[in-house]
Image (cartoon, rainbow, N blue to C red; front, top):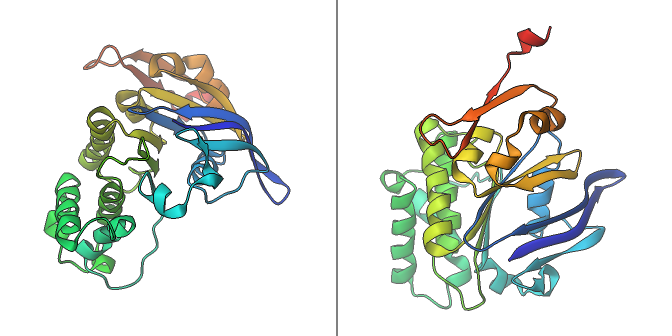
Length: 267
């Protein structure tokens, strides 16, 4: 399990996260949502080890995050940030191959390339393999980096459960690829028992694919639970300051569907 207990983060005098306790279980897709500035990305950056909490702790598979050796943790936890700046003229295959860096001593080049090919096939990027990365569109770059992080944790580890942290993975993607990315996350959770945490803005996408949803506002954890519990009109109004109606999804009745009111209706 990847967990936080009493996690508090500051940036100077600004509080980013306030006393958040949250668990990501093996085989689970956990969607984190909330308004802009709620602390979603800060939480993910703390879980990735990029930000150091002022109080509380983070544990991965029962051990404090700080106690893990970087090489070992890189084989367990992969992170897809909102933006992955890369200005060098690498071909796409080599960008994805970067994900295999933690495995360069345990796997030969042929094994690593085979995994890269599988990750690219899964993310619909095989046809981009020989393209120069900097010539790609924003959505294509996003899918290439998804292939890279999937390649990083492609195989089971002797150190326990693997985790995939995704920060707004659908933001630059078209409709079909938004669903494809979340279906991949669902696949890794269901088939590989990977714990997946995804920061998402689209609550309906989250409700379709996540086992649980966590809502943040102003750095506080407002609620966490299954989608049918979290997508409730009063809670959505409280967290997002906007009215919405909740109905059963017409195709998947066990899943809720949020219908937001027009802003004009409030004036």
